[in-house]
Image (tube, rainbow, N blue to C red):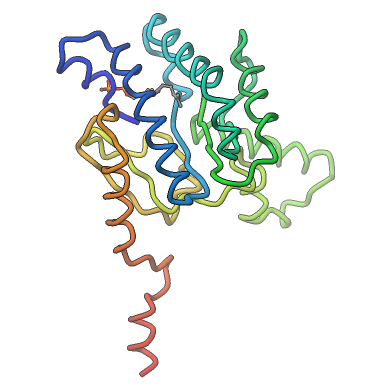
Length: 232
Ligand code: FPP
């Protein structure tokens, strides 16, 4: 969800206004995803590196996430949306962790869209924590190194049980992954859109999905067309 700050700058507004407008784009995108039956939508809300921002901005971002959960949880629950949170939970202070847990607990049996909120998330940190857990199990004799498979690694990540993303959209013209779902993105399609996140809309979302639908995904194999040509 990149470009909140630049959106605000371009209008002579403080960065915080960009983040506020960004929450409106979150609402519109979540609604649009639910409306067309998307099963999983992951939003990168706060990275493990975002703590490096000025204290006032960090506090503003945490405040917006908390306000979003407080205000929207009942409505999301009514829409049968399940909330899952990925990221490092250790060391989180204040009321943010109880709120995230409440959102997950309240919606745990919902079956429409799963909204995955990446909070205090960094992919390298996630993978490191997963490997530390595996190493502990090996050390304790609960696991043999030869039994470690990609599926087992998957099951130890914060995203356990969540399918790999088909499409990753990054706004604001940045063309980087920035420590987002590095393991899970092995076969994801990428879409880089020039628009700043606050301008992201149902229309831009659907246009990205249409482009995605025209992509030929081969997962290292052959497309149906290629395979048919080989077979004939
Ligand atoms: C990136 O833009 C955006 C963020 C770091 C924060 C995104 C968070 C929200 C929209 C609010 C809370 C989240 C939810 C799910 C309700 P940037 O600040 O890096 O913008 P810039 O690249 O233009 O500086």
